[in-house]
Image (cartoon, rainbow, N blue to C red; front, side, top):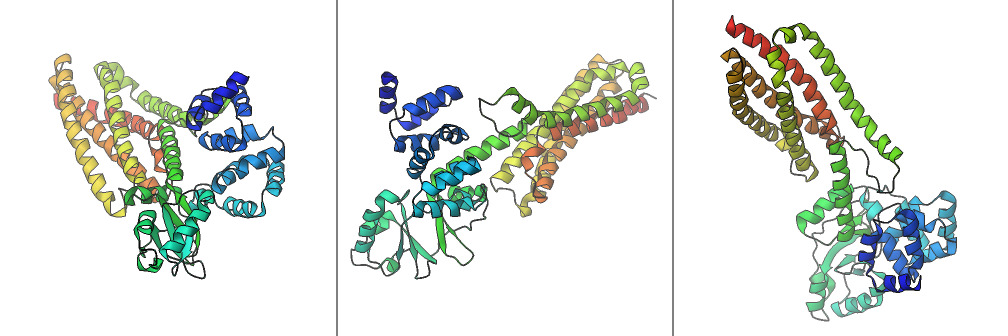
Length: 432
């Protein structure tokens, strides 16, 4: 054990968290117990994915848990406390300092996926009449209590946000110059109920390191820092990726197989239902298939290609919506573009597949009918793959759920109906 403690003491917290993520829960607890002090334990919890904090704090006495939470930024402490059991949470809160307790309780009142839920109240704010020299003195005094000092926020007597200045501007300003004379008055700010993804887009679009959070009266409440935004982007990307694959909500490596089954079952149920409906539809064409069995050979490739095109269109559309690149004014242009893509790809692959079918079949018209079905299927796929995410976005439903099971299931069902309802009758009509 002493060897492990020495190794942990020499290892950076970020590297320790990376290694620890691959350990079992039992081993994670063992390593955590060997971390030498509350500050490093707090840092380790922040770098680990939930519910690591809950697991390692649950066995500790409330006083030890409070000491670790006190070493965190208030926004991180609020997130960890949300995961604790009600009784333990209340006990730990009573052991925090009066100031920390008030700040943490205020942060816990906001929804998790909003600016208020991820903001920190640890910032530097000054009056507009403060001189540059006085501002630097204040900054030095608060250096240990501030998570990010890249920006200094300027407020009036009522704590209303009136400006912001960068640390560079402050350091290079003449000592006796008033802050009001060189602050930036056009401040990019959000309200506590702003969605965390919208905050992340602001940080990305404007290249800023923090976004101030203000109430309806423009009073400064806190800031959302870039490290929190990076966490949001990782979380949202993981969530959207799993939804697009139909794997449900994010899980950890230690989750039991039962959790994974519960997450995936509803999504696969949609695919299963669509497959059963497709079987019923194909059953209606059983006699036709018995007579024209050649057409059954090309059903898998038509459904497979249509499904791929539909997934591509849906993925491109979902990405555009998530990045804010597709707004109300661009919906029709996006639809038009994907229709052109579907038509072009459909014609290209119709020529390839139809040509092969014409050489393999007894009648050249079979190839023409199969090629036409391929073109129509891919056009339908690109249309649905684009329209479904746009419709869900308009209805304020997460468009990531449009990909995977829902798009492919609908395409399988409609593809079967289109293929047997168009290709075979068309071939018969041409050979008549």
